[in-house]
Length: 140
Image 1 (cartoon, rainbow, N blue to C red):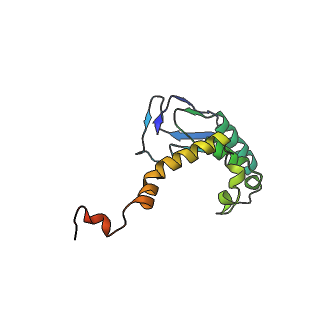
Image 2: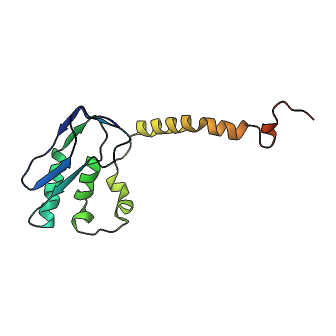
Image 3: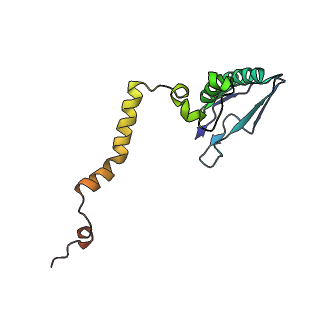
């Protein structure tokens, strides 16, 4: 989600960038996660892959998070280029495709996860167990 602050779309005779995006447009959670589609052709698969990687590198979208680098990484992976594709491709090559997190990013994620889970942990660890929690001030 966010606002598209800058959009630069590649324009070549061998590609089509299907979208309805414009600068200043607000992207909300109501949008389909696939905001655009890139269609590329070449004289063979290798040329089409090269052109697709180049088009992704030339595509600029600022203001919203995208998976442009991830998609370019998939296309540039040696197994993809070799045509060694299967339904487990992304899982098998996840370590090569996903960016490595810095120590700071790991720490920030741990702090956020801890903050989000604190109330649940506190209630589980220190809360009054059922059926006693529903008794309120009642005494026998």
